[in-house]
Image (cartoon, rainbow, N blue to C red):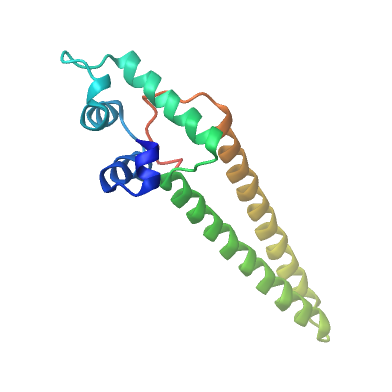
Length: 154
């Protein structure tokens, strides 16, 4: 199927693309397997172990080939944009702080801006650390098939 997708076969490309569009539930993955891998799907259906094994195989294949599924890429892109915006806000605060320090008699305002900038920088660094930790955990922990996105991971 991978070779067909690389050659441009529309069905194969659609099948492989469907795997990376969103996290697959066990039922969705079983339906995908029945549709696209009928030779691997017995008439009586697939067991939960077979579906889980296929999911783990898929995750390992993605890691081995360096593929990031679209839904993960989109989440990382959203987090990147959030961090980028926070950094830009921090840089604006630094510029305001420098202007305030350059004027006479603005020590109290400069101190307030410095405190605000320090807090914003700490929040940005904490968000970056959390983002990096989650990203690394997603590549190091074994994938179980009953994982569903939580509000915290969105």
